[in-house]
Length: 257
Image 1 (tube, rainbow, N blue to C red):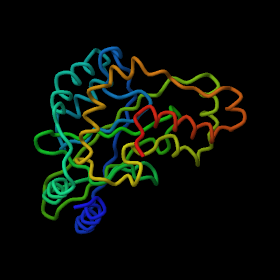
Image 2: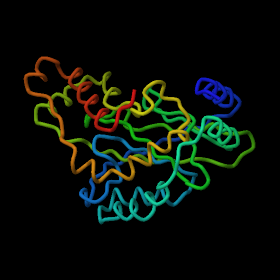
Image 3: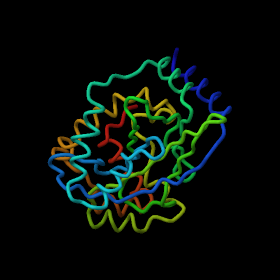
């Protein structure tokens, strides 16, 4: 089965299901030990999706709000062990799991769909999606989880997101503050590994997520931050500066064409 066939089958399955909408809360994240582990990568909005009521999501909320080292424990003791050693599924395997799932989801930000066909496999219990973020204001300030539910099911999904702004120069920060309100949707974009269409079944891309989880601390420590010069910012103007900064974050997160 090729990817085009997979996406068509997934679209047909989506059309047969009912919809339910949930707001995804976005929490600011400040790492407690950035040289050791990060629960959210710098310059991204990371969305955690799990079954409704899963205590993992509350642990993510607590780790972001308490800032007492729980973020490191959650990565090292819970999340990383679940992902280590996993391999990418074939398109056919991904399709069979999606077809059998009582509920899967799309994630939207404003008028932009960030991902579709999202569901946590039973033995993993979560899906993690990184979205490049330039540090500017988000409008709307929340994400939307759109559940696609099989008729008669009681199953549901839930999500929470963490936001970790990248370091900005004073000129970059000033430019982002001047971005017009109708352009704020451009401060966050689709996961770079899905740039070709943004709709590939997330389970099939799980191996890429494994690499991100296992390399967080190293990349955060070694990555040389890129900035725009004051002259570039004056030439570009606020909106174009925001787009350039987002492109920097997309590349830093491992943009794949």
